[in-house]
Length: 422
Image (cartoon, rainbow, N blue to C red):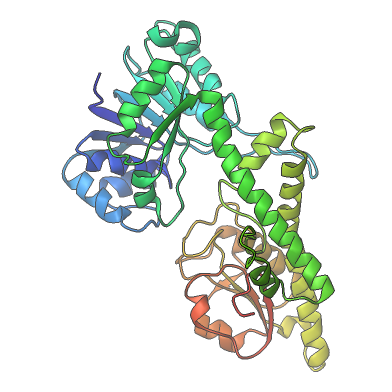
């Protein structure tokens, strides 16, 4: 059974590029999102996010009639759910639990237009068992249809999990070239999912079951989190021992079987800072290393903030004629990683916010990838590099955007969490 019409639920950093890829292959694509601004922007042939080359693909797909956006689900042959999976609120020190309400809402929304022969794929990064839960929500909403949890290969509707595995800033290329993990709830579900993704995927589609596919994505990002935690912990140790951590890592990496990552101000984004908690919340007694890595990386921003406090104190001691209110602190970078505009779960954002809250003087930020300051940083001024370089007394390097590697500050004190100006 071919897929002539494809619906993508959630038009964010993953959903929109995925929808655009299908549309670029002359498939009719209906993108669904609750954000009216995003829907209107896409229908104008424009994009509401920053991702290289995506604007041209979306513009062509919309103008040729292959892509449209809506706030209301419509009938399709395949539905890809790419909505957020954040945390539920919890007390400090508690293990955060995943919030599946967006998946539940998306499932119930598309259930109204499902028909026999449809395929539903969960792309959202999810805790183990989420695909089965989605299938249960669909079955509850549509008792007139059968699903793989009860009818296996003979189900009216096929269900699978296929996590995205792309790098922001390279999404268009990696959607096409990267291998895909396909986790169907039955062999037939996997088979049909492979058929769908082969519309544009050149990488291998590797088949497994839904639970293993869910765990694969969590494992990939948890592995990275543990490796980053080692580098971050090493940076704290080296600071105490008066050792240049970047020189140390460069020397250690000369060993043919050692590849230590670079330390930073913490870990951000919607994957590495989030996914390990899905494992910890399911198996809290067993996930000891993963849990410790999360605590190390979550604690790094506070360490950076304390270094900024020390720098302010040092500046005031060297300039006794000034008060704290006269000290300007500049924070370089707000995104969660270099050369993108994505601020989700960004440690740089958190650090800048905390500095603005604790410092009585002026706090400015340099972020070349955004045009306006986020609401939570309303007391922080967004400026260009040339202004911060001249006017700041304490310079806090948080994100190694390519623009920052081209320049150096020549006055004031530096807190460099990324080794850009080491």
